[in-house]
Amino acid sequence: MKKRWLVVNSMIVFACLLAIWSRVVAFAHVPVYILPGPRAVAHALRDRYPSLLSSLWITTGEAAGGLIASILVGVAVAMIFAQWRGLRQLGFPYTILLQTVPIVAVAPLIINWVGAGILAVTIVTFIICLAPIIANTTQGLISVDENLIHLFLMHKATPAQILFKLRLPNALPNLFTGIRISAGISVIGGLTGELFAGSTRVGEGGLGYAIIYANNQMETAYLFALVFAATVLGFSFFFVVVFLEWLALHNWHESSRPQAAD
Amino acid sequence: MVTETKESIPEIALEGVSKRYRNAAVALEGISLTVDRGEFVTFLGPSGCGKSTLLKLVSGLSPVSEGRVRVNGMTPENARDLISFIFQDATLLPWRTVEHNVGLGMELEHAAGAARKERVARMLDLVSLSHVAKRYPRQLSGGMKMRASIARALVSRPRILLMDEPFAALDEMTRDRLNEELLRLYEEQKWTVLFVTHSVAEAVFLSTRVVILAAHPGRVAHEIKVDLPWPRTAKTRESKAYEEQVTQASRLLRGVYQP
Image 1: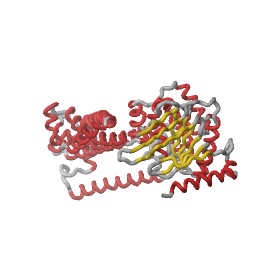
Image 2: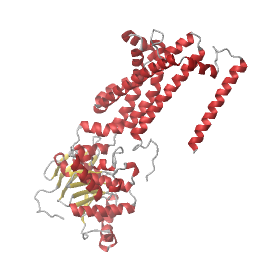
Image 3: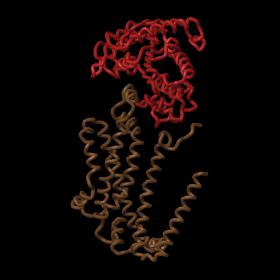
Image 4: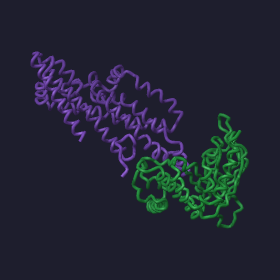
């Protein structure tokens, strides 16, 4: 009951905001290239949705590609760190380095290696998504109750069994924390990556590229439509991850929705 | 309790065992102790007397600094097939259902699926948990979790049970009931048990022998033979003999606590 009211109230607030925006633009006679009204944005959305969809699709691919690659590589690196303490002590500082390296400075180098375009943007996204995955997953893999390790040892478990049947499931909540952080920055990574590494040909770039293009052409209403699309994309990523997390953890983990014992 | 012909090899033997930690703290010094097959030995003593360490040495999870531990004539590492360890917390894997927790040991040892299922079902029945087989640990009470932990330990048909304060976190009524259930199983399955506890009453109720340890360094201070009649039930706790044994053990333990 409460939840339904929250939805209704949010919709009312949203409608009010749209109305205020629309009235302000109309009364103040703001030119459409400075601040378009909601109607102008909706028209831009309607008229140009084929090119908007293609941009959206490209950015989705770049962000998702970079994110998935960072999960695969990040979990692999974390597993190596968990198995060999020495390697962890040597390698872990570099994860922090990875997090602090200014991606804007590295991007030209990547373009230099693979050329501007989708691959370059995906690599940029991959790099900025990697550190949260490694850091969180490593933490989960190594913080296992000592008695559980003892239990496995009493059953003569192999190191592989301890890794896959104990450490990995134990790290699952941490992994999802990492993915949630990285999912947010993957979309930002895709967008900003395109600002300097997007396609050089019109119609082949993603959202970030289209935003720059629309800005240069003073197509402010379309620019707003693109920003709206980018926001929806970020939201969708977040919700997909939260849903997957719920699927994986809701049965057993405390952080998920409380479940009354029946 | 010994039903087979008396063996010449003791089930568990500690000979002049000492344990020192890397920071030079002495956990145990000069422990010599022999436990025959089928004995139920309880260890009592103040914190820091090395009760838990003793179990770790017998299971081979921690190496001795001096002396020798033999389990059925073997090194602890080689005797792991005979031993099950029950920890203070139920230490169930939260991502597994009760039945998959109980089947963990057989799974790690690559037992066939059908045999495993049947064995797990029998053990759950034994500890009256069949109705929650498909639940996750977080949905269980403390007592149920501990029962699941015991079922998990029994799945691999151990000859020796090492129990490290298994019921310490439970309320008294639950603890008493689990004590009774444990003894029912013990009389049936005739394990050798080493049991660590802080409760004198629990120690006397369960054991054939109570070992009182002193701290700094951990050493054997007293040994008490408990000769209460079997089977022991809730009624046993009301008997005069039980009360006397508890009083005696308490007195000895008090002496150990004073400097």
